[in-house]
Length: 110
Length: 116
Image (cartoon, rainbow over all chains, first blue to last red; front, side, top):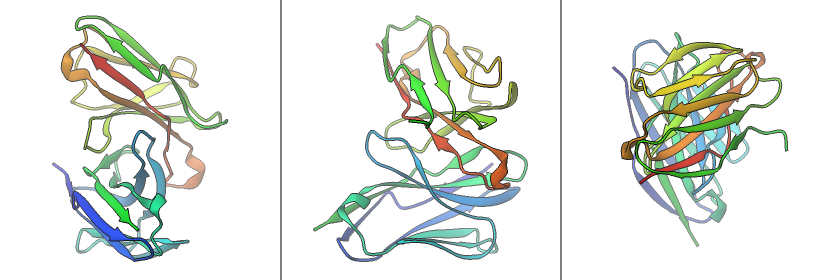
């Protein structure tokens, strides 16, 4: 089977840095994606890692360690609009579907 | 707006009725996915198409669920004899192969189904 674990909730202060971790257990792992979803909205792609290391896109960075079956999303210079749910999602080598974690709800406080 | 669109956005039905949802993907995208999301959970894969071919279907998808993509463009998801447990947000996403194996999936706004 497969499973993904991420914290259910994280709270941080505006302007701070927050890290959302994701550990996964799956056979045939290919890559790890991160999606953002505001309440009532659609999931929106943030980043994708297939190789070990850090990918940076503006204020957001994502890291992957395949040997540790672990990744994280790093959000810098937090803004109020970053309050949302963040999902890690695994892509397997045998399929194009995504297998999502249960999400981390981020609350950014003034 | 050239994003993924879904219709209807909301649907309330009585248990035992049939419902059908439509998804229009981004025009050049040949892969189309259906997911289901309940409150506090991540999207759960249901099925996906490459062009008109349905290539994968979740074991969670009972015989009451059927999806089609007859011309490789829009898709429909039908739920027959709805049950209260079918109440959820049904999300459609699309992607195209030009981005490589890690291709981004673009999600529509979803259809929220409530079965009474």
